[in-house]
Length: 366
Image (tube, rainbow, N blue to C red):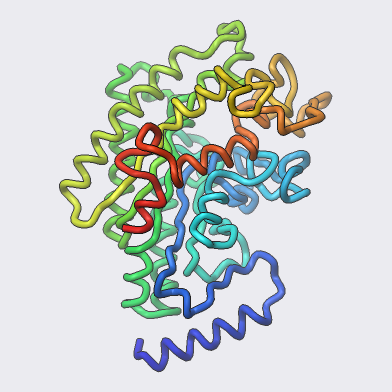
């Protein structure tokens, strides 16, 4: 695209941004593109901001009350009472809320987009029997290819290449693979199974790199072995789940080593790894230190610890707490906005105790 055509597009973009009334439309001022850092988000329900709303028969939904009650005052598809880690990261990057990729009318991608889907796993097998009802990680990467082509049509090859290379690619995946391994893998030794999950993730990383990505942020496995859902399981008798803990810890041990290898193999590849397990465990074990009163039971749900899976807002007789700010978990698995805000701050500007080899602010500035 010639310089004059690029300028013409920018003028058109300014006009559209000033006249479109849809609150979901994301617009960036063209003059800011020089120092602009888009955010592309991949993963599962920890990052899903509403993609599952547009899937027929989605395996996981949060588009009903009381989800969204705190910040948005209505459900958006986020599995929490308000904003997620990725929403706060967008704010740190001086971006608007990043919309779901499948949202109708979402055709402008210079700020990035969100591909995450509740229930997604790194393995296609994790979704056996649920094809089309969740967006697996490999499909999310394919969607990024589509976005690249659309961006090239809008702003040209050169500008697209620049933006993709400056962008942050934020990824949270694996929890669904470990919480409920697909039948073909249930008899596998833990090391072998974790190796397969990380192998699939590595393939997607390389695909994103081939598309143009260079800066990656990875959220490790959280301490969901101690979620209200796991505590509520009869065999756990209120304790954390040992099998899930072992898989999560193994994942968090192996992935940073793989990322370090990729950095030596792929030119300009940079990454950060966030220790989600330790940071969430700290809040579970010492809630008052972080401003919480309740860390074992969920704010919303049914049953023991309000821990019945997918019970918040759905099961007759479900309960909602009076003060969500006291709770670490909003539903049986997902943290509250308050917790996500704390974790996002650690990802953005935390010390090497939590993010290696550096935090997201440093990564964005490189």
